[in-house]
Length: 190
Image (cartoon, rainbow, N blue to C red):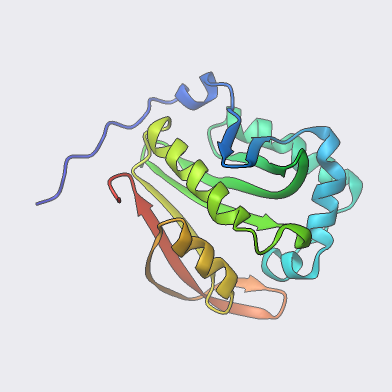
């Protein structure tokens, strides 16, 4: 029997909140700041991040990217956090798409090379997901990654996301169209 849906947050509820800082053990997730530009440029200059995100950024583009997150928050369409370890930006995590009426969000993330292998992404993902269920009252959080991106598959698994299936030729990466794994967590997953 289907369970009853939690009531969606009314329009304006997310925008009325101040975007929080979140913690995940030794990590701090905080809203992006203009001073983070160098880390954003470095992230999108990294060949591994470029492969999956298909872009690089100039300083001006990074400034615009950072500034856009506050508009996305107030428009209730997304939320982005810088992920810090020992007061240095080591990655990013975002609700790249939010639909409050449907109780749904999609996440994306990347980690700078010097922080890889320390489970930064799964810890940040778990923190954002927990917050999304508790505060935004979302029902479902999704993530998609290329089927050949085994690191992202591990991130999803470590953060408690269930692999649901494969979307054929769903995303274009630097080397062409990729099949994508779809993972999700529901608010009642344990």
